[in-house]
Image 1 (spheres, protein in one colour):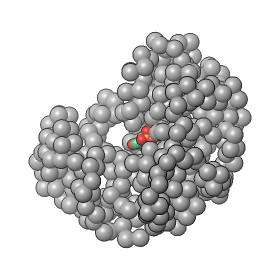
Image 2 (cartoon, rainbow, N blue to C red):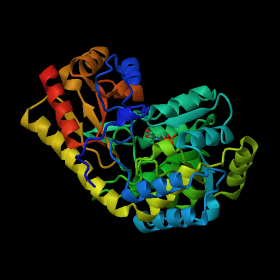
Image 3 (cartoon, protein in one colour):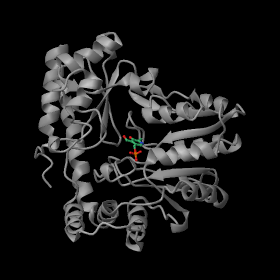
Image 4 (spheres, rainbow, N blue to C red):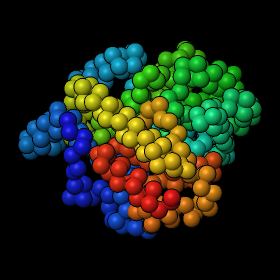
Length: 389
Ligand SMILES: Cc1ncc(COP(=O)(O)O)c(C=O)c1O
């Protein structure tokens, strides 16, 4: 596990590193790619071995997700997070966002409101808009450098009859909050009282920095479990998002049956041979690798924190409690949003996701993906310093 080793990702059509992608979104094909939320690290050795073995077999006909995959997934969530997922509550789907889109369709009608806690992962907005639902914001509040949920505002929005769903991001992309049991319990109470269905996106659940601890939303109460669904996937954890595989956990029998009917109707629960191998190996053998990764990521955060302090920069780090994303606050520079974006991508040559992509509450911020060798972070920070200061 040498997370310092640079790996050439341009050998394959990698979204984050593609020159066309960087040109299209940042106007600079040579920018350091730090926007797309995947990591520049190799997956755990056991995953690579199992994939090599699977590839060497040479027959790639239909497969199903084997018992060993589900046993490994269940053991993972039980041991790491104290969550006893019942196997019959799991539904299969190609990706987290497709699970969210299906759940959205099934628990609301066109024109209904869907509540988001902005700034938040932009694909939620795309799914809401493209399904003819209405975006209703329950913006997070930044209090003394730490984002908080606004429960009063949520209670008001939830009380509006047309608002049918809350999409929760637990832990939160991009602000890095790992929501506490107390916060999630409040969410569950407000939403159940107002008949608002909760879709909890937990793709970043494995990334919590001690003492912070990921709480699976469905475990906070039976009310939460019966009135919600969680979307989980090992895609981010083991850097296997290109395998395209995810699960929805739906404890409510009627809701789960609805999801399953959809899966049958549109035939979305097929799998691919490589994903089966990678997911099983990850959950079975990835624990030590993930522990080392979490240490390394915290080292990257510490590097950024110290760099900003030592150089007395007018940029603040919003301390992440988890994820492999950092949310940087550039507002003290007083720059226009578009000017800031251009300076970062074209003058500093660093492709950070502009904060406004996550909603207007993100204006003046930018998100940096830190799942990369420290050397890359160092280069990016030096470039930003030279440009802005
Ligand atoms: C919070 C969150 N949800 C979902 C996704 C995408 O997951 P998938 O590719 O499984 O749809 C991402 C990727 O960045 C994410 O950060």
